[in-house]
Length: 265
Image 1: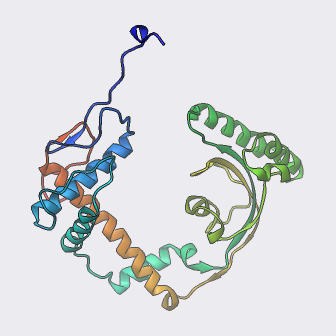
Image 2: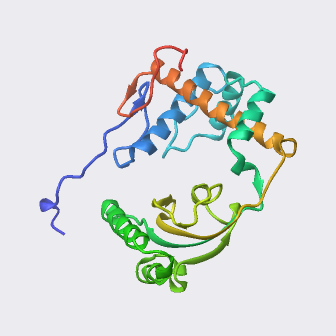
């Protein structure tokens, strides 16, 4: 190969937290990947300042922190994020507001057309194809169900396409959480009026039947309710903590939410 005619080697800009690099020039990271590395580095440096991690701890390589840093960050968060147990009344309000989460035995029988997202794919074009399919199958009533089956056979990237998109009966444990959220806990039957997003791509979904299952009593699930509220509180507190740390740091080349005061709302 004639290297004299080769184009310039593109190098990614270096992002830093308080001067510590988050990436190498050879890494072309997405904004989300860079943000995750920035958050980890904020926490690693906080653990060093708190004396929980040796100052000589090696900064991450390829975004992977040391085992010592991971342990120190866990200890720092446990100390900083003091979360009270949810009040009983808050637990009851959460239970009443989310009945579908505490129902057992719920199932749906569905079929779908999957438009899979693959590396290098034009996502806009894929969405346009999926929306066109959704519009086409929704413009016909149940008597024209063969149209849905034909769309699945011709367009779906799922092996179920050979069976007209049939997935059979699905319960919570049978599908990805983001897919389950769109299917369970609702009353809709028929072609859903929206595309369903999952880690696999975009789905045109028809709910054929529902079995609602049985509602569990508050007493039987109050432990799960309490854990759900504690997790919500933890996520909120961690987000606020990271905002404060970012506001106190010198941040270059990465977008992080920052707060000038620890009184973050």
